[in-house]
Length: 369
Image 1 (tube, rainbow, N blue to C red):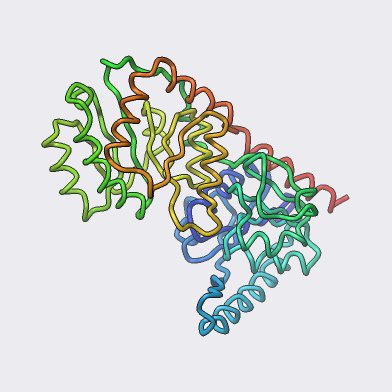
Image 2: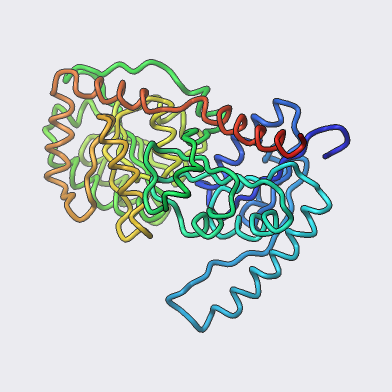
């Protein structure tokens, strides 16, 4: 408890894919009068002043790299140090529940909470449970999922699972607006993004694909694309030579607005991306990150596409000519883009943060009772 207020501790770090859902839950919990503390790694500490919490606490963590045994002792020692730090913090904060969002930065706080008898909830963003969540799933009190089916878990874990959806930030909710597919001769907005590795692949593939579009299609196209700084000049030169109106940036701080303004999105299939596409309701060509651990992005993309919201294009099979032909087909097909946008919106869970907050508070109230 913080004063007379109920206190919830969140454990998240590593990437935005883990931190953004935690931020969305924190916003919702604070709106309900709950005190929130974040236990995180150095990446999460960079959110100081922006993450809606009473305090951010640094907890040491490390990724166990089983393929490199020589580093395991140091990694294990760091995790042990994190466990001791988290245990001391939790005794001091005295939360009614601890919520973990996957990734190794969440492990020390969750293991410490389970040893202290504090109820723990896991949130799994992907359609396949990650390694860190699997380690603590057996001792978790409850598990929240983002997809209807969760792969790579036991029946006992399934029995604890509740589908809440993947919480998105308030900026994503605010960006929602109706979708209207343009006619073939009307302006068409194409958004392309995908993190550092995705940006490199798309910077190489998109100009070649645009070159193979018919000239009238290029003239009505507006391209908004994330590019790495070292690729920017080459992509700008190629798109300009093709007569394509293009906005190129290494990072879009207003990405939810960019998604809402797009008629078609081409992107990777990270869990947060899938959640935002669904909440905003936009059709997407999904290019899962190849060689991802446990093919989590492929499973995310397949789940999204199975509902009619998009199309999965493995990177190894995506050549510029095929991509150009597919974009042309979507532009000319009567109703296909609009149908996919509607299907995406049906999959969206704009109330995911509220549903997850309900689950977490039910655990906290049970403990108090």
